[in-house]
Image (cartoon, rainbow, N blue to C red):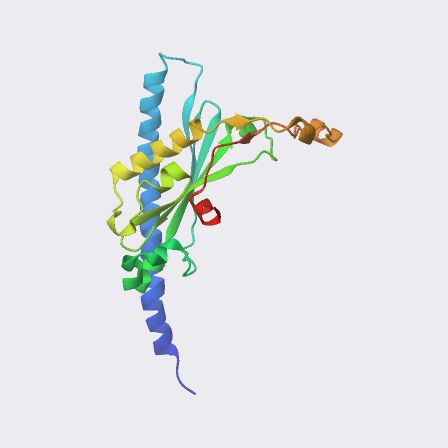
Length: 224
């Protein structure tokens, strides 16, 4: 029987080592994102307190892999996934010569940005929807790619040109905040909320609080 140990070692060298580096890149980016976001929130809060002190702009560090930004009625949740992923070859990234030139470039760490209504958290309305606004992908060479709502997705379409730096991180956070602000909460049709269970009232899980409208994911273009 053939000894597969050398083959296992080679597979680990080509993939496991690369994935560990991708994880380190992603974690470093996420930690830097926390620092930049905290400074941005402090700056915005200082500038806005003389305009309308009732509008709260706040940063909350949840844990190593999550932080939150609250501004008025919106809450953005930034979360880093601990696993490294790749995509089917039908994904748009595989059209890039940069990705096809080196197999290790197709693996990514990922940071997600979700938008919730701030009151959903404040009042523990667990059934209220949240929306994935963006997924930031980071590879072995610290290149990035964005999937998400249209304004965010079209910021940097060519991964080969996308080097991670502080200016991009700041722009990414600001763009996510603007997208959330510009997306209004729309009431559900009256007919859809005419019937409600008593349990929903008791549990403060009433339907009809509304849904965000205006989000257009970049992937939707494939279905148009």
